[in-house]
Length: 95
Image (cartoon, rainbow, N blue to C red):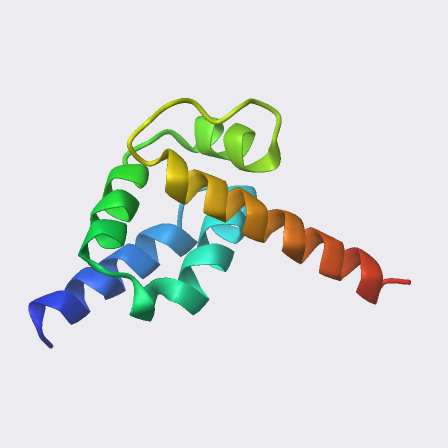
């Protein structure tokens, strides 16, 4: 396994094993289908994001609190948009 592959595998594991089901789904649901296409800057942002507390991530990604002005804010905004799209698709599928 190459170093970039190991890095992506580690990030995927961390994205899908956050400690709460909510953050596993919010973060892992975004990361899993996109990770292979992430460039170096996105990988670095994801690594930094993984160091943030789950409680804050869940609040920001669900809209309970505004996303603060952090270096990882663009990635957080993309994650929140994707989560909102998945929620809308689930609602439509349930109709």
